[in-house]
Image (tube, rainbow, N blue to C red):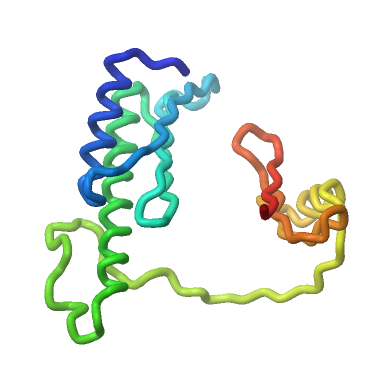
Length: 173
């Protein structure tokens, strides 16, 4: 959707303010989308913010009735994610005896639990297949994504469902 200059300035200022966790040198893509589904009255406007911070891709999505509310919700999520990323980066560089001396952000309202744990590992034989075969296989097993060995290129690829109902293919360079 096209946004006015005033909303673009507000989005730029708020994303810039959120960048304070990374010395203010943060560039982000902010996308606004209008959903035309009449069943979705409360979340008609969708805002997606994507940026590269600390070597990691940070992406948040929020929706609300109007564009400013959706932007505010997305900025709140964005700041929480940036704060959490900064905490993890700082904790990673500390030695074991200094890890809990100072809380980076003591007023954080999020739980400061450990990073997610891998609780299950799947192993399976991977036979080469074309992207079309992988698409059929993905539909047959009912997953949102499918990891496969591309018979055309000989490289591993990921096929996934996009939000617009189409499919996307991730290939390594």
